[in-house]
Length: 208
Image (cartoon, rainbow, N blue to C red; front, side):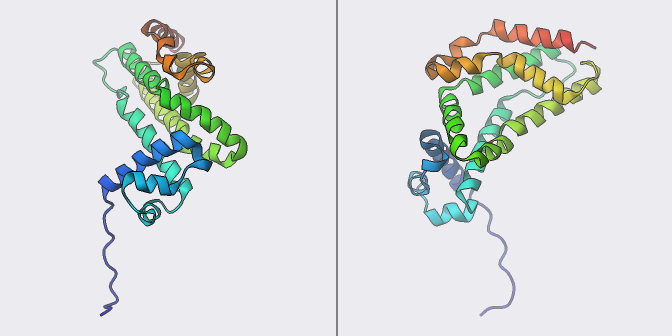
């Protein structure tokens, strides 16, 4: 009998959602957005298509959630720049090494290449990808740098611009090499010495 009361919202099965996102990652990385198949994702995750749509509603939402998940993985591997007892250079080196390890992984490079081709046909996918990933990372780095400026460990300046400077100095021309060379050799193109030089130049430019 219908009592007119709504049933409480069922909690999301995190294990099932994680399986869907893992399958979506493999599918989108392999085939890109347009050619990715919800049927294959469901089969690989051992769930039904209905379950995927119940969780994410649309293919676009699933893609955005997958990119956001990758971004959280990267953020989770980055050290917090917040400990006054640890030299700022040590913390920035930890950030640089974690960032480049993530960006230089062969599957991320292949995905980046595929996304570039995808955006040619579906420009809206570019905005979806940027909002779910790179723009969130830029915001995180900006907040980290703003905190260090407030503490006096970096000179006062526009933290968003400083974040762009640090990111660009760390990455350099590496992404150009990655786009047009064998992805498997990407990690070999970045050394601790080159990262250290980038961090030192950033600290010199923003010395308090």
